[in-house]
Image (cartoon, rainbow, N blue to C red; front, top):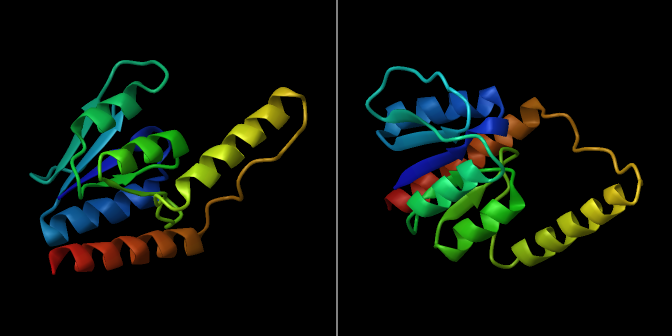
Length: 149
């Protein structure tokens, strides 16, 4: 199992959780971003810098992900591609994307984009909270325990 991180927009606290998990469980974690990422010195943690451009990091993750790998992302289209390859996409708030929910999430995303392009202010997501960090850590832990059985 490998954990891939869509790192450009991933909160620092989530990266810290992943760094601790990598060391504790000796699982490879790779942060993929189009900017230089500093990571702790570890044989389990890597940063992969890709060229700038829309969806370049996403394409790199999709090209490298294997069935059973975890991908941390808030990007719904990327999550859909990861699901198609048998990966397990998890958003930084601790919610798993699933085959049962991804179509609805993609539709809602398209609807919100349409509203915004029409000038409607839709607001953004709620501020990232400690509860979100806990939810993420708990969801990740449950999956890792399940995968190791």
